[in-house]
Amino acid sequence: MISTFIFGLVILVALVSVGKGIELVDASRQNTRASQILQSELELLRTLPWDTFKDQTNVQLTAQFRTQVASQFGSDQFDGEVEVTEIQTGLMLVAVTVNWIGFKGRPYSKKYYTYFADGGINDYFITP
View 1 (cartoon, rainbow, N blue to C red):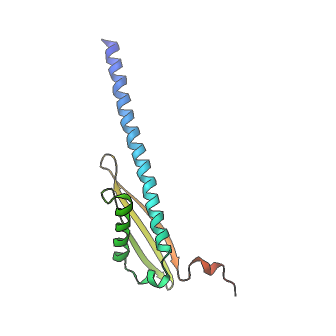
View 2 (view 1 turned 135 degrees about the vertical axis):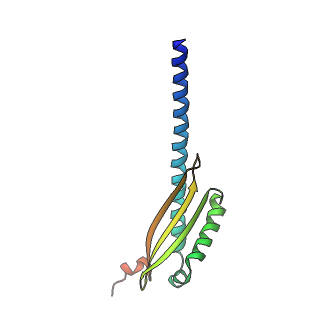
């Protein structure tokens, strides 16, 4: 009787451990996927000419971002937004956020920040 109880307890602990392991693997996989989504969006934004980029609103950029996420990763899992704030003339702070629901319904969010400047990084290499 005691050995049956101990065996049952060991099985229960093993099942709980497997469940936690699956949850951690899922969280890690989704976190990596969210990082890929954010990096992809920042790279797409970097391809825009400065005049086009500065004239787009947060709403336009977010709509474009959501379309890209839906086509590449499925809109049922991930959602996101882009927020552009002008720091000074010729310099913008861009925050890209992605949200998703994890294995047990837990909400997650990841945000990347970057700066965009008129002329881009090429300004650092131009010498008078």
